[in-house]
Structures are given as C-alpha cells and as structure tokens.
Image (tube, rainbow, N blue to C red; front, side, top):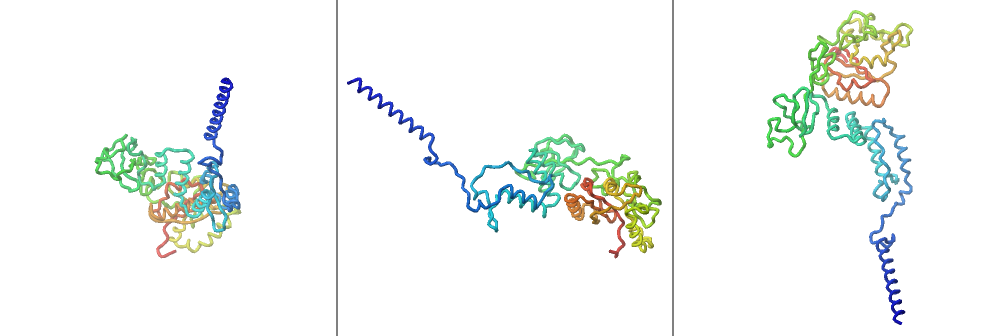
Length: 408
C-alpha cells in the first residue's frame, strides 16, 4: 500500500510541475489577443484605399514639374507603413496623398516659381551635404562663397587655427556682420577673442560660435602691378582685363578686326560692329546672315550720318566672354558676328548696384532652364560684370557707349 501511495504522490507532483511549465510558457509568450500590450496593427482609412499609389503620384509629379538632375531632391529609402491618418493629408478633391509627397510637390513649385539663383545654389549645397555627409566647416565655407565678395573669405570656426596668406584676419559674426580686425598681421593665428585685443566682456554674440575671415590676397596684372579694383569684380582680389588696361575701355580702331585676332594683348574690349564697314566684323556676301546685315545697315544709315550717334551705335565685345562668343558665332570663312537666336537684355549702372543682382538672377535662371544663349548689352563703362557670370557658358556680354541725354 505504501508503494502505491508513493507512486500516486510522485505522479501528482509531476503533473503539477507540467501545468506550471505550460502556464509559464503562456505568460512569457502570450497570444496576440491575450497580451496587456497588444502589437500595433495597420489601420487604413476608407479614403486611403481610393488614393493613387506612391509610384503613380511620383510619376505625375515628375511629369508636371521636371527638375535638373543637380537640383532634384534625393528619393529616401522606403519606410514601413504606419497609421494612415498620420502619413496622409486630405486635399479639396477628397483624395488622400502621403504627406511626404505633398511636401515634395510644394518644394518643386517653390523652386520653379519663386526661388532665386542664390537660393537654388544653397539648396543644392544642402542636398549635397545630406547625401555626401560633408563636415560643418565645409558647409559654412561653401555657403559663404554664395555671398557677395567684399574682399574677405571664410577661414575657420572659433577655437581653430586660421592660416591666411595675406596674414590679415578678422573675428566676428556673420549674421550681425560685426567684425574686429587684428591690428598686427599674423598667420597662423588662433581664432579667439584674445587674439583680437578683446576681453570676455566684449563678446560680440554671447553664446554663439564666432568665425574668422581672411582678407584675400590682391591680384596682379601680367606686368606685376595691382589692378584697378573699381574696374574688376570684387575688391581687387582678382586681376581682370579692364583693371590692368590704362585709359578707357572702348577705344576706336582704324581697321576691321579678324575673328581669330579678337581680344589679343589682354585688352578689355574689342570692336564688333560699326557704321564704317571697314572697322566692323561683317558676314561675306551670300552668307546666310548677309540679308540681316544689309537690313541693319539700311535701318541705321541716317543715324550713322551723325558722328555722336554713330559712336553710340558701335558694339564692343567684353573680352572676358570671348570663349562664349566664339562658341555661338559662325566660324566659317564668312566670320559672321551674328547669332542665330538668343535672349537679349541690357544693364547699366555702378558696380555692385541692385541692377547687378537683378541681372544676375535673370541670366542664371535663363542659363539654368534654357539651352539658348543670352546676350547682355552693357551701357557705359561703369558697370562691371560679376565674377559669377564667367562660369555661365551660354552668356555673351557686349558693351556700348552711353546713349545721348534725352534720347531713349
């Protein structure tokens, strides 16, 4: 009896242990419906089922508002689906679109209709930063390069060592445009307030990281002299033809120039068209541009009879844009100075004026969205084409004398 009783007790204990194990397993790995913290489930609103697919919307966007490859925002990797009410926005027509795509569409509309060229360059830089992972100092340096040249360039952030070829540096804040120039030239120099005869109480922008800039080294002409800064882009940090040439820009010549000999001798301008046939570049007879040239001569014949007006009709090439001119004009035996088709505008005024920035935004937008050349005619000798124009391969710049007062 004692043996049977011991066997039943052992059996009961084993059964109890088995039940405990099953209960423990259920507690540690609950069923989807039994847990106090149920797993997140996908909830889609009825309207979301009517929305076009992500690929369809993106295809429609690209068809409606194409962008140059350099400015197209990079497509992020696909993300897991979440609650539709958090990832969608409802439009007037009742169609629900993903918020990400709606934001992209708004950005594309802003780029196509509102953004200036400087804003596009900044956006392109930010895109490159996100893709390539540039360091903050490089980003700051590139963003500052989009600002108008004032003779200073970004060197380092506060706390770093600045190596400046001109040995002239300054310390300050970009946003406030407040700077303290170092009294004695030194390079390398630590970018710190103590190096600029300041104290902790003289902090220009408390709590903000300051910067150090380096004055650009003055450019030199081929003869070794400094250029005339007022006749060159910037503040004389780069030599230019006009700044290295004595006297006036527009000089009268006695004989017709040859296309192959244009702008020789580092001259700033060369004559292209004049009332006197012997002093101008003109297409030969039976050239496809000869009829247009004949019409122009007849139209200006009366004005060419007056000496002052005849000088005002002379057209000079801005020699810094010689390569662009040769690219878009005829190189055959006719040496025609005519361009088949182009956008044309004009500008004048003093250097660094508001007219310069208006013209810059215009020419860059045309260069960005069109393959046709753009011709800008400068009136007078005061206006200086900015350095950024030289990188535009479809821009041709001419120069003419001021128009007589009272004549429009």
